[in-house]
Image (spheres, rainbow, N blue to C red):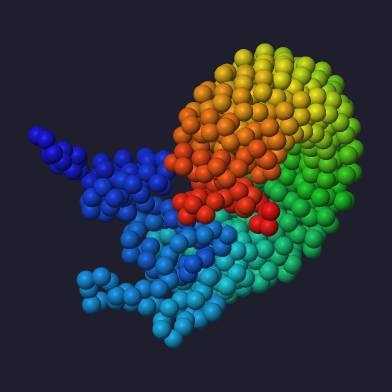
Length: 604
C-alpha cells in the first residue's frame, strides 16, 4: 500500500533500538531521531554514552540531558570541548509554563534573573549528574577545575555502580576520594593526574574502601602523594594490574611495596627521576606477569635494572624507553635474551643504545610487530638488517632523526617484513628513493606512509608506491623533490586514500589536484599549505569529485584566493574545517560557513 509505514508497523521497539546501536556516527543517530516521535524516544533509550563540553553552562546541560537520556552509563566532560546549549530561557511558545531555573552554586553564581553565568562544571552540576544518572558506570571529568570534594562526595553517594573515574586536572581533595572509596565498591579504574589537592590521606582511605576491586591507578604531578600511598595500595589493592606514576618526589620505597604486594601487575609506566635500579630489580623479581613497561626520564637507572626485567618478566610484550641516558646495548641485549614474547619496542632519546642492542632484538624477538626509533643517532643500518631478517611479523616502523639509517636498512625491511602496514619516517636524510621503491615493490599491505622532510625522496619513490600499495594515509610534507608526477601516481593507484598532506611541496601544481579529484573520491582531509603552484583552478577540480572532504588547509598558498575558498565551502557538503588566511575569506563566505573557517594568523 502506497504511503503505508511498514517499518513502524512491523518492527518491535527492541529491534529498532538494536539497529540504532549499530549506527557508526552521532550525526546518523541524530538524523534518525528526527524521523518521528517513536524513533526519537527509542534513540534516546539506546544512547549509553554522552560527551559534554564544560563551556556554555555544563551544569544546565547535565540537567537537560538527564531528562532525555535514561540509560546512559558513560559520561565524558571536558573543559576543552565546546557545546552550544542556550543559557537564557523564556516562556515556551504556546505555554504558560517556563523552564524552571536551577538553583546551583557555581564559580560565578547565579544572576538576579535566575540565569547561569558559569562556564565550568560546578559541584552543583556534579550533584545533578548523580541525581540524573544513578546507574553511571564510567565518568571522565577532564580539567573541570571548579569541581571540589563536595561535588565528588555527592556524586559518590548517588552513583554506587561507578567502575571508572577520571579526575584529571580537577582540584578535588581527600574527603572526595574517601567518599569514593566508601561508596563505590566496584571501582576498577582511577586517574588522578594533576589532582594537586589530593594527599596521602585521601588515597589511603580510597584504597582501604575499594582496594579489592581497583585494577588501574594513574598518578601524576600530585606533589603530596608519597610512598605512603603506594604502601597502602600494595596492602589493599591485590588485584591491581595497571600503575602509571609520574612524580619527582617518589623514591624506591613506593615502587618496592607495589612490586611486592601486587603480583597481578601487568602494566607499569614510570616517570620518576629518583627511582633507581633497586626498584626495577624488585619489579623483575616479583611482577612475573608484567606485559608492558614504560620508563621515562630516568637519570639514575642503568643496565642493571633492565637486566633484572629481562631475567624475570618473561611475558613482557611492550617496552618503551624514553630519555634513559645511562642505558646501553647491554641492557637491550638482556631484554632480547629474556623477553622473547616482545611485540612492541620504542627507543626514544637513549643516546647510548646503538646498533648492537637492536641487532639482538632482531635475532631473538621474532614476534615483534611495531618498532619505533626516535633520535637514535648511534643506531645504524645493520640494526635494521637484523630486524628485516628475523622479525617477519613487523607491521609498523617509526623512524625520527636517525641519521645513521639509510636506504640499505629500508631495503632489508622491505624484503623481510612483507606484512608492513605503517611506515613513518621523519628527517632521516640518508633515506631516499631506493629504499621507498623497495617498500612499494614488496610491502603490498602498506596503507599508512609518512615521509616528512626526507630530502632525498622524489617522484620515483611515489610512483612505485602508487603501483604497489593501496594507501589510505599519505604524508609527504617537506619532501621538496616530489612534484606532480608522484602525486598523480598516488591518485591513480590509491583510490581509497582518505588523508593527504603535501604541504611545503613547491613543485606541486594544479594537474596533480585534478588527478586527485578524479582518482580519490574518498578523500576526507587534505593539507596544501605552502604549496605555491596550486591555484583556484586546481582546487576547484579537487573538490568537484571529492564530495566527502571534511578538512582543507590552504595557508600560505598565493595562488588560492577568496574565490577558491568559497568554492571549497560551497562544493563540500561535509566540510568541517578550512584553515586559511583571514583576508581570503569574503563576507559572503563568512555568512555561509563561518563556523568551519579557521585562521592561522588573524592579522594576515
